[in-house]
Image 1 (cartoon, rainbow, N blue to C red):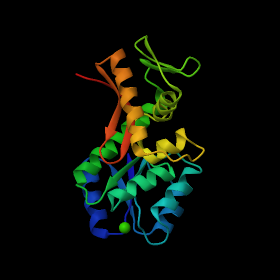
Image 2: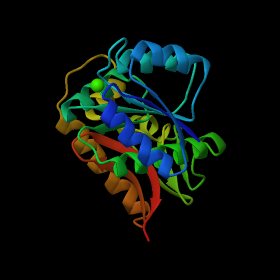
Image 3: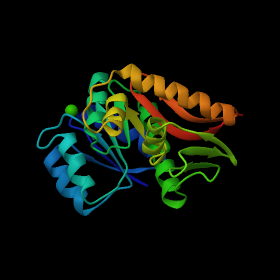
Image 4: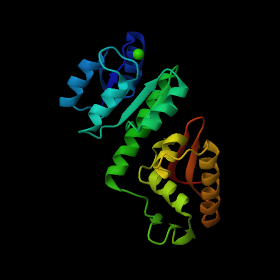
Length: 225
Ligand code: CA
């Protein structure tokens, strides 16, 4: 597995490189955004660690540009946690986000998770135990059904289409109210809360919707052990 590191701080880049190599990955490092984009377009790695602020071209435009032709897993790295919510709202198509300062161990763990998720979603689209039925506005877990409101159905559809991907509240609102209606963050939270109650009433040994602290929510079908 080959990981490209796009990071203009040489110390950080070599730190990540060391950790990844120790874990058996091969790496390439780019300190300039424009050069990285040029090279990555023609020669796709298995995953890209992409810093947001870069000379040449920033991480945002690199991600957008690559997404036009490729679904290579991208983990975006940013210096500020507030930036993540803005990035999520822009729907730039990154697979995960990491905030600086990070521990290299955490980065390696995320790389593994994203790669695992990517391989899995390419083989089996959705967990067969969870079925979302748009015609009847219902969700089924292990054959047990619960009915959903229009908003709940939309929320679940958006998130379960991309299992494991984190959605910010602003991003979810944009998908559910495309007319740009202004609703508060709490609106999303309360819909999610009800949705979780409904799903756990069907099967409380299964967790489908997970909160990601300070960022938003993700769908992942997890059986509690
Ligand atoms: Ca930087």
